[in-house]
Length: 291
Image (cartoon, rainbow, N blue to C red; front, side):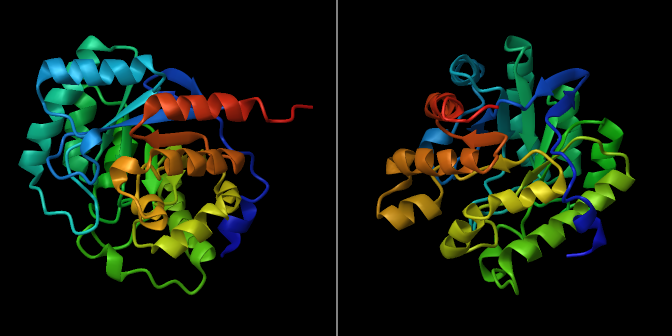
């Protein structure tokens, strides 16, 4: 996997983030709440309109239930999702970011986008973290933008686009290949001076259901990268297809897999259902053996 990756195997995992001068501790896993400002997200319960009252109510509930981060996205990245222009994406997310920043100043806001222009405008509006599902592959200016903004960056593994990724699931060796691709991006980010990087293995993005479960079983391998680990499996097809249910019925399965992710060192859980994820973290913590 290369000398750079080997050198990182003994590196301690970074357990803090500098978010706009505020030091965020990750020694206790955090919960990130999903706020989709899209009409076509795969889970209807995760959709939110741009109406300020609804935004404040939904975001406020999530924050009150224990969400440390509110992740705002305006482009559905489910397999086969339709293209959305940058102008439309901005129209969706900026009012929401501004509203949350105004009414919930203590909440950390992340912007879920692969476009550097959207990321820049959202940070100016109050977002403090960039969550890029493409890992910098869909916008050549993203890494320079992150470096200039000096914000934490969530580096996710994906191949292709939401429209093509289901055809790009061939790996010689699943986990080593994903690690190598992420490591190459991580080296580039470090060279540009990006200090706070969070790794997301990208469940469901250019991976089959079977590959998702292999990935889940090998999450500890990603500690080699020395970065906090974010897991996003909330109500995804690896849950509902496997159980023969719908996304609306996939909460129980999601909680099981989130707990397994915590056991393998997940630092952030990205979820639709905040209260249940917070409870999973609390109960899991009581099982951890402390010296």
